Image (cartoon, rainbow, N blue to C red; front, side):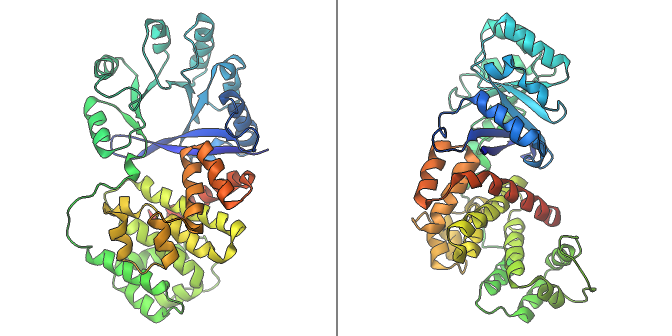
Length: 405
């Protein structure tokens, strides 16, 4: 029995990822939407922490783990290493003296503690001395309505504040102005459409390279010449070759030799990754990381649904956030690129197989388990394979991130 684990990034004020919240569900048909948080937490510990550890899901960063009333009572947190996790006490935990004693024990065992979807009452005062992070759902409680409480909490020593469900850049800026330290939500993945000049020359070179690798028969000489026009791109190509990712038997003496060594499929993927990363200047790195995770996740799903479209599915995931990366409407972005019609339509939201695959990935990463069940049914795929696909996508993305950044 698999446990579905989605991860959602936690950002600091500079839009750097400092941790991930892990969201769990059972992926079986009968219990998909109904499994209790505490059962999901127990399954996570058994299937993940007691196998490879949670850090393989968080790329080495801290994990925020939900702890409900039953998990607290059963002391499940003791199976998690204090150095790797932040225990997120759910709003379903009541501020009783019995629960306080459990929380106090965790505090003295060096666990960092957070309160989720917090709504203040005086009964929480004893707990607040033990809490290092308080999360406010700003969709449930507007920033204006909690401003007084935020100002009070900012004066408390050792307490940090996190704004949850931040959906727009304006909400991020407002929360930052109010003094929030951390932020969670999809504000970083939505385009902020602004007026700007045409795409810069180095971006254009990347797009020219990309257009060449999409051709049925690649012209390696031409692609090598394009790489040679941008020292940074040439360096990244050679760095990939020498990174240890691929076994290297002979010395590489030219850009053309490097491209030939990689082979057509790897060149296509690498150019796509370079393009996504190269045009994302000034954007949170997580935006590019998420694009790369999506690309591999989509590819793995396509292999099980229709292997003939795995390459296009890879590109669909990779460029699914290109509007946010370039701060332009998706229609304007895809019109400038030589995408196949199917890929173009999927990115524009038209229902085809690539679109349905991308929808599965989006539902998974957001922890929208009802939507995921529906998306899987449209593809007629076995959802029990998705957790393994997700883990593989994260590992694969981490490997390439070491090369790109």
